[in-house]
Length: 358
Image (tube, rainbow, N blue to C red; front, side, top):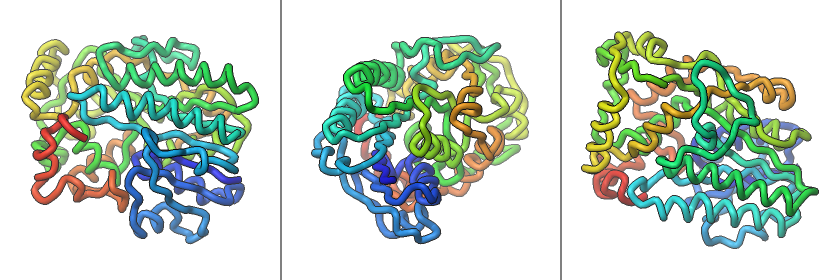
């Protein structure tokens, strides 16, 4: 079985590629990325030295993807651009138009199966006191570009399935994904250069805001990779929610940080974030804050029973690893995850305008 993976060097991609190279049923993996990684990335993704993995430089917005996909048994589409949040036309081009090009190329190359990384962010606002299954509407949250784009790509997939009934389509909808080696990238993408990583040490953060709706589902990157492997190598179809237990609320996060909770109105916290984003002090938009408080809790029974997926890490373990990585500035040997990608003293992050340019 030959599998082509777009976005193979990112947070989900590195875990997925490693899971695929370790699977005896997979004979070849082609990892596509805008910036081809060095030898270290290959050793991390294929630690057993199977020789299954090859890299190819490709941009989903303009590369001819058909030759790269021809002869593949499965395409896993993970490529996604989070920044620049101040230029939504750029992310729309990469995420929506790029996804349309991936799906069109898979159809033209007659690939038998397509696995797409959707998101909890594709869901319409929902309950925080009970879990919803995969039938919950995927209209997104209109105030966040990320959510609008994920929801729109769900509609593109609806059209793709109708036009290509012989292609097996799987949609994985993960919660928030963390691990130690992705900490440097996620700090750059969402917190920006002004956050000292050493503050993520228990005891140094005195309080955690207890906000209405602050209940998050997370999972470890390696467990996400296993879900995509199972979707690629099995015969599953349709959407699958994936997340680990427990659901993280303010009390759980405070316990991890050795802090106490303080009840705060979401409106005040959002106003402070909006001001910081408007001044280009943080890259994460207030729309992402709204989204985190709006998304429903997901039921993961279908992934566990039909996909055969069981996470090896708890949600607390995933967050604990992330916090350790944040303190250490941890990363991987791929361009998106490299710990030094922000430049000396994080100069490159400042030079891009913190949310203005990717």
